[in-house]
Image 1: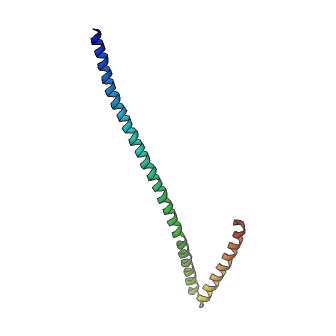
Image 2: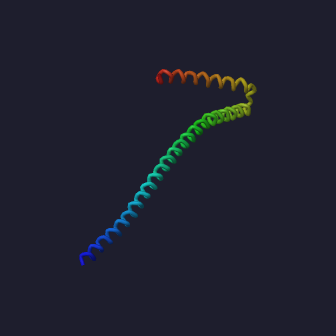
Image 3: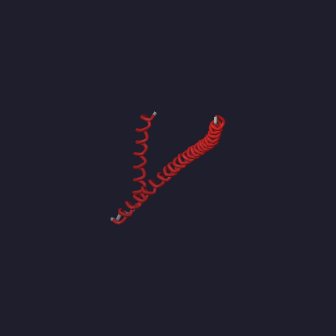
Length: 117
């Protein structure tokens, strides 16, 4: 009887060892899969961040010409309105407006420059 009991214990130990080895193998595989997925996610987040920065830079580059186009359109509209009321020398008016704008733009730069330094 003792031999039979010992055989059952050994047999159960062998089955447990096999199952434990399978569980350990599955956990190791799961750990490797999670680590690989984490690495891919980190790499993709870096790519998203770089792409977002590039989009922001591109939008900043577009904003300046868009503002210039809008101011040119406003100037042309104002000149058309002046022409409709009978103003003859539109070039002189446009030159005076440009001179006025440049004069105050330079003053703005001089006012801001000391506070930036």
